[in-house]
Image (cartoon, rainbow, N blue to C red; front, side, top):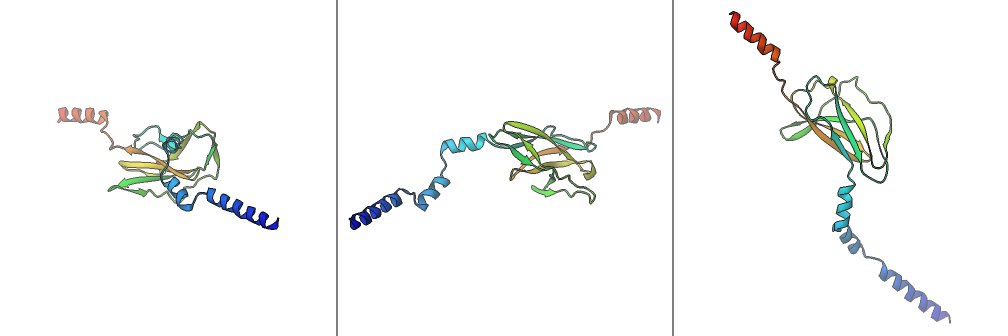
Length: 167
């Protein structure tokens, strides 16, 4: 009877061991996602979207929305970076020494959004291509914006025409 129990235990252990996927099978499943996995990944993408893509050098803030299409809440802090594209590479714009962030943790509910602001007035941004970057729920999100060259004021051209007539 004792031998039968040992034999049963060995057979039972072999059956359980053969049902478990091998390490090679587990890696293959992860490397080759199914179509439904890809659809879920693209449908639940947390996004940061800048409202106005073209700002002037006198604007004081960049306004953006964080959109959470997920079935769970996400949290974020007030910190952000501003980066400028130079020769195809992004470089962080340094903040002034007296610039700081309030330590506040904010939450966006599932299927909701929130407005965030990037204060840029103290950065004295020149004409160029920039982006606002935030760390949200362990992910790096960003969206870009532009500061175009200032256009001449219509009042200046009228004044120039008057001066040309007088001379």
